Image 1 (cartoon, helix red, strand yellow):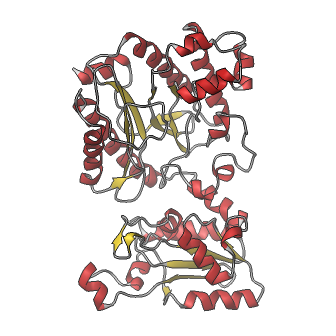
Image 2 (cartoon, helix red, strand yellow):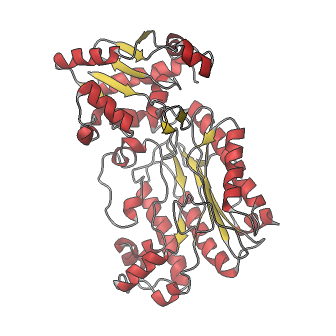
Image 3 (tube, one colour):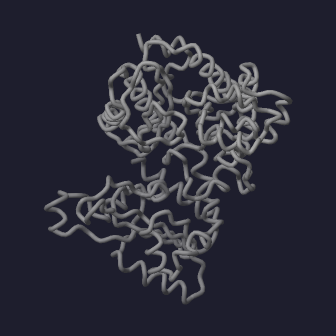
Length: 460
């Protein structure tokens, strides 16, 4: 937990930005996996953590801007809870640690809000992303789940985004801690993989490192020989000679800040020739994107620079042809690069994605609907304090290739005969985390091997 002054300053700034009304913060509750007492690993709502710091289930809070009140609502533990959970600080003690002096039983929140509604006061809430939040909003404000997200307060969303997007020095320390743990996870995977192992063995090893460092995973581990499936959480394959292994995993540290990195390496000691060629094109794209990172540059343009670099490399190898400017504009390169270049990162691995990409990543501007480009989560102009990922990749997806070929799509730009030869290639990417500084960008955490020589050195 940060100092109580940090949380007080955050709430004070939020009040100035929203200016009036009541701000409603819904904390997360425990959630049963298959019955009530067998729960998933608990994770507090990130915005609740950001402003109130309390990492406990069963809490909600309000900031009443007009009456200058800040209240955390929740019920104290009974002896039955203590028997199973042990002694914990009281809600009043937890609240005092973050500068909140007023607490109340959980049931009092409903009566507080009902009174406000009768007075025609404005109650701001954020988009719900869990069913429990939808139920709470229905109970507290009679907002039907079907319209809860649509009716969320845009003013409140923007105020939160305009704080959380800019990482403070103390936050950067926490993010780098998470990234360093993440780097250790990737180094371990690179060193241990060998023919005959299961993907699940590698997934288990990297998770052990995250938990051993006092945290958790920031998202479910991707550890796969089928890198063409972008979010592949299946771990049942056996590694064999000639395969490449793609690892996408990250640690969440004890303060709930995230790391997110990807690495690709051969199951053998060295890449095959065609793996080396495709890997180098993706790496060239990666480095070209990093070179563009600085304040004032639109991340959408950085993405397009990375896409152009991939297209140039694929044209050199005979996969693409024709005018590359036209090909990029029309999205032909997305046969190989279907996803976005990167995303914001902080307390959430895709920071504040629950609040809406249009606000977090696009500053209110509409996103593209073009295949590939529509998956770019961040497009806005970069500013100092932003933390983001860089993760271009090249993926040969057989179903996508078959569909575009059958539809005769982009035949002026794609050599399908050449592409057919690589339908079994799979996919690859590298990913690193960066802070935008006053003059450019800085890699966060310790670097992991990414050149062909560096990667192969880990495999020897």
